[in-house]
Image 1: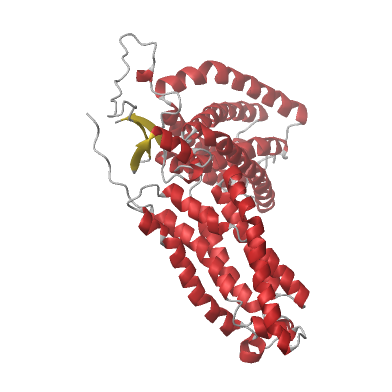
Image 2: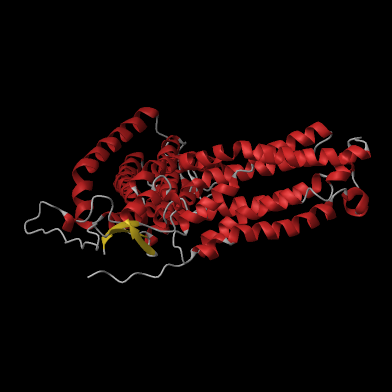
Length: 490
């Protein structure tokens, strides 16, 4: 018996974000109209020729838009809707500012032409609306949003342009400076750029490219790379840092938290310790991680080790207070082994969860590319920050400073882990194993015309026939209003 059809819901949040991205365009476009004749006159154009050049400026905008619209659309098909939408917004904002700072007619005409060439978001936004709202009963409401934004922007834009043009003469107390006297038409375009900035911010942060679970995994992965790599980089510096003879007699020490100094050991000894550290890591990687992760689960393992990281970092500086070098190095090696265990569990577990969070295999390459980029940012930020903190702590007598800062990042990295969900992935559950004895494939009901009624579920919003869903998601999974993509039989 077929399952009851779920009632689709309008993805309001995504439509609001798209509306913010759309609003800036008509504001920028229409704000030019009130001051355009005055601006052309300021370029020493005869009054009788102002109308002709005003028409030319509008014509080059539209002609340039007609020339590049197809290329913008193809780019969005190839590279994804979100990056192209944001790129186009940046281009339109930049060309608008160029127009506002124009010093002659030729520069102004070129700027308007470039603005038209950059204005490729009209069709892309319509396509995006069609992709996130494929349900016919909701399309009248959804497709009315973009025209509404154009209407609002066209009403607001001329008022903005007329009020802010030539501000040095209109508002001399506020804008009566040389800058606005030299660029009398910059202010309307600066104001319009603020609307682009709002749209860019909203689009960058909230326009969905990956599922919610993917985004949480990316955040976890970034913070993990930040504090883990920073620890490994900082540890040799700490071991080599001079050891104070007696911290208990140091007048600058305020035990147990205010003290300074390291181990004072040379590079040979440090290299030997890290060699043992690497050997231990190899053993853990191949002999301990696979069975334990399989037994306790990937997510449970990750939760445990994220709690271990801050404890390791907070304990590390206190090894400098131990009475002799041998004891210091033995205790430090034990701490390193614990950190090694946590790291070897954390990175593979995060990678597995990230992979399984992808809404489709088609976006998996992009998702892993983004993960590589953001983790690289973490790996760059962590060592740089911990190095500065170590220098500051050494000068002030606070050896714990860099380690406790890393512990703070480790705590931040542990928080989102508790919002993660262990997704099934692309291989299916164990129950789907064809090799299991007694396994039976569920019967797929047939439609009246004899075709299969197999469906794809997109999120929890709606179902559609598989052949339609394939066309819908092909190359554009990043814009699905969903946190997952699964297959079902209705």
